[in-house]
Image (cartoon, rainbow, N blue to C red; front, side):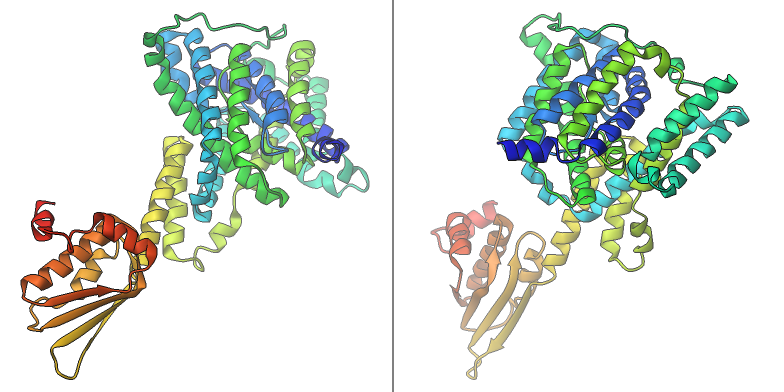
Length: 495
């Protein structure tokens, strides 16, 4: 127990505290912006970010990952808030949490193994592009001071780590934010600040229950939104967990993360916050600033609340240009530049999956659509590739009255036509043997293909023997096959 606490909380105290401070500062404008997207008061996003970050620090399955209010979730809330108001959003947030906990107990986190590396790469690249695009409004129709501040911030971020001694101790994004704020306040620069994003809350969040009728009509209203929020939230969280796993060379418990996200969203809904999930941008900031354990996530949440409630006057002075510089650093660091260099070296199918994922996510701004398209394309390419590995060879005996077909490979929907086309149904021959010792049957399409071959040969007056089915293949053929059953031909025609 003590060893676990030390490993998960106290093994990297300095790095976690400093990185948590950086993340807390970067969370403020994003939480406000996401609240505006959803059509709710800024404090709804800020309370959600504080609550989710603190709770997930204890119950999440990926140490060092940051969860809070996100843009992907905010986009799904717009219609619900517009048509029914904040109270229904809070109710939908609670139901979203319940659905995510159920998903965790159903071990749906294990489905991440079906997401290929090319989909993850496309997901990462798309998010990097979206993070950069989100900064463009802060860099258009502005004075030269903003460009100068952003450039100076980037210079500090990339050059400060080379400063002897201090460069390795203090995260450069924190130095960027503090120094740019000091410069803006000292010279009295007229540039956009955090305070211009929206009013910061001045009170602590309080426990509340959504003021909605507890009936089936309410459930019918919120369930579609809750289901969408649960799916997108888990998808983004699990993808982010996979990326943080790679960045830190560690593993995480995906099913625990599902349940943790659910608990965090329930807590957020009861404290007046909107639903949220893991944030890849903030998680990358955390990791690159030295955060590794649950302490960094806890510090980010606690410091966020302290800043917006008790130090809002100071926080409001932070120039957006400094935070833009931090987010540009995140987008540059998040993008997989190796994926561009490897386009010529990797298979075409891999590149198509990666590019398709990027394009769909960027154009729809919906991470779920991009990942869904990527997974489907990857599955189709894989099925097509495996289907080509089926081979059917034949040998005629010396008397020319017995032909043996030897099948090797995987029999399923993609290879079924190839299997059928390998047989000569017009050949006048007394007996045919189909040797399946080196084949495996996976689905009913493969079984139907075997039925079709056997029945068509028998119609031509040929005696057919099927031999060599392994145990698993024999089970599915016995259950769904009709070629050895009475009236099998009639059943096949009926299908």
